[in-house]
Image 1 (cartoon, rainbow, N blue to C red):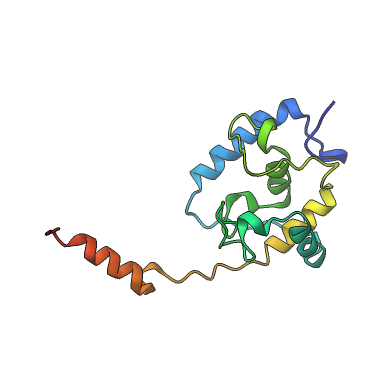
Image 2: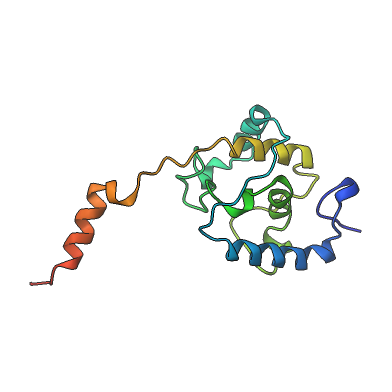
Length: 152
């Protein structure tokens, strides 16, 4: 039987779809709210190498906030290690709720639970360094310009 996690916390794949739906509903309900983050048991240095080995930076950037895909900093999928692992396991063809054609699926034979925890530990070292919107001069100039009536 295929499962999402290994060991005593294994979740059969058939039962994972409703679980994934519940996680997504929970994440949507808490969007924008500060949620307490879970414990980190992985090794961030090992996770850093995995981040580069699996080319995560290609989509998520080197800081988790500059890539062309989902911003990792502040993501609800980083609430705890188990949520992160489930997210990695339920990508692409295994996730009919939110199919993705860009992020690969990471089954345990490609990334073990321990490696996923290491990757999680590294990603959790990322900080949100974006300035407040009101402190971005170019953005504010564009907004002010757009507020003015157009005259050819």
